[in-house]
Image (cartoon, rainbow over all chains, first blue to last red; front, side, top):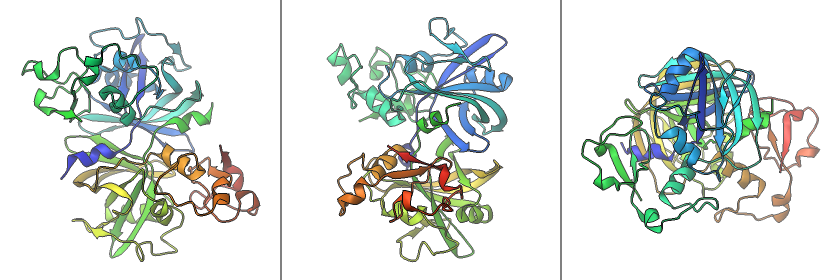
Length: 214
Length: 214
């Protein structure tokens, strides 16, 4: 069994948001698929530990925004690397409300979908939500960011015009990725210098679950 | 509702195969996602009308091969544009059998997964299969083909080194795609010259469901 074969599956990068009783939150996911055309339905998969998952279980609705290939990584970092249990991610992030009252993120994104959950499937560590698309909107005609683009951007392999690389030493730093949830370490300290009890902020796996990205 | 927003979702291109009672078949899908890491499970979505879907409903197992970005389009055409009800797709296609007795396609592919179905979800026009990955294999280190790459290859927008373009007039021909199942018309006759009762070979939608790809 060569687990790296699983890394050849193609994904996009999406901002997933929801709202329940006035509480809004969002996170980054890579699994979004259209599953049927008539009716227009999509599926998403979310780690159960995510606060956004907890909220969607109550709200039964969500918005997904398709991240722009040339968008800044700031929006991904804003939603991806910390929990809405600790911070209000919408305090300093522009959004518009859709007809389901989801906070829709358009910054660094090219399209948005507003979705009503019609089925939840318990997959153990994750929930899958099958949802009807009640509205779909193109923001512009840019290309979507693939998860491979994102990995390459983070590791400096992909040169993105808009990307600011003020520190060339930073660019040369080794990049480490969690083998479980694919989170890419983004801290200021070199990964090698992190304490031994460091755990992945997303899936809580130990430092040993990380591998060096070439 | 702008349906084109749905076209910004990122997919890969995969050869899906199975075997039941000695009958083998395969088709092309674009929806494959890893859904959990422990246990290692994936999801696929298959049009119910597909013969491969009918076989998987009985076999409860399948293999998926990840198509190579630089692979020839022949393998996609071989599995994608006709039904196994009419032809034996494995008559002139090399394959190896995996431990589940699935015929695994390695030609023009970079990785393969052998999977046991653990849950089937009826989505109306499609079935979703959640499956445990019992084996995973890398064939080489090439990049996967994304569905966007495939569209660009078909329309001549993406120049692929290995692609053979013996007829430059062929390359300039307008490309038409089914808005429902995303099938790209591949026939020798110009799409415009097809009879009015032409239907999509995949989803059976009428000629009017096709749009011109830029």
